[in-house]
Length: 188
Image 1: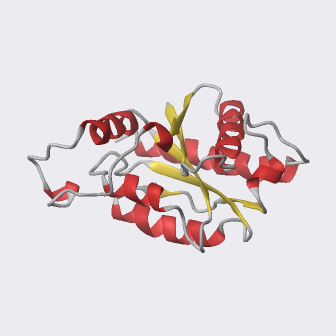
Image 2: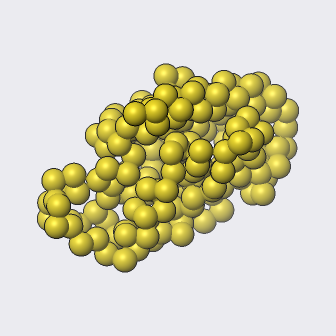
Image 3: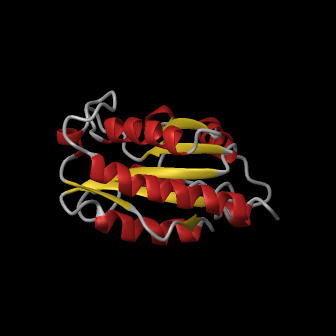
């Protein structure tokens, strides 16, 4: 099984990269039989969504090269973990933009959500669930919420700066659900 951990922020000095690196390592521990890959939106500097027709309804679509690279990359996964900060009570625009370019890459595939921020990223998760439904993804029933600033808890390389045992336990349950959902959805 291929699991991609998607970094949902591209800001310079972003805390999300450290959180995502830690998450990827935790996914490797919880799903050792899986191939785990970190996919950083910063590596795909896409323009603002600019296609004249919705991707899901455009069979003759010709995406720009950077968009095609993003689509090709995410089409390789069986399941995803999206790591997002909370910006102004939602998730970052760069993540929404990346999702807007999808047609069927996430369709009927499971997505686990990990959020961080002053409310644990709860508002980001609510909005992200709605956007993911639009690309036909299956979000896990529970999410992993990291209360506070991710940079206070994780170094840029993913090393915890504090006790994160409770977060690790919550994430482990989330990843176990993701693996079960991926196995069930891939049977058909």
